[in-house]
Image 1 (cartoon, one colour):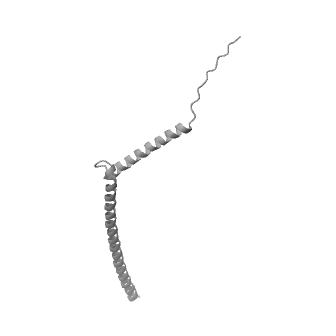
Image 2 (cartoon, rainbow, N blue to C red; image 1 turned 180 degrees about the horizontal axis):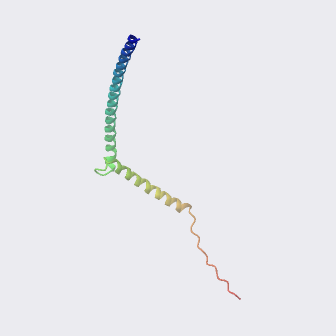
Image 3 (tube, rainbow, N blue to C red; image 1 turned 45 degrees about the vertical axis):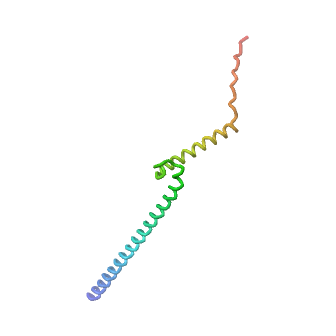
Amino acid sequence: GAADAEASSAAETQAAAASAKAAAKKKRKRKEKAEREAKEAEELLAQIRQQRMGRAGATIGDGEASDPMAMIRARQAERSQGFESMLAGLEAKYAEPAKKKKKKKKATAE
């Protein structure tokens, strides 16, 4: 009885230690992989920024090329202006002119 309990306890302790060691190894591997991916993502982001700076630098004023929110606002303004002019053109082409209201003559009592 007691020897079996001690043996199973020792086996459980060894299994738990091995499991903890394996978990620590997996955790370290996950951390290393995440660090590699983060480094790769930063490199890609730097490449994308360089490409966009090259293209956007010619069209956008100094300082604004690096500000993504300024780029977004400028693009939204361009789109809204284009949309407004399109609507004005469609209204001019297809809208019916407003009809003039005729005044009713008051009936005279005779």
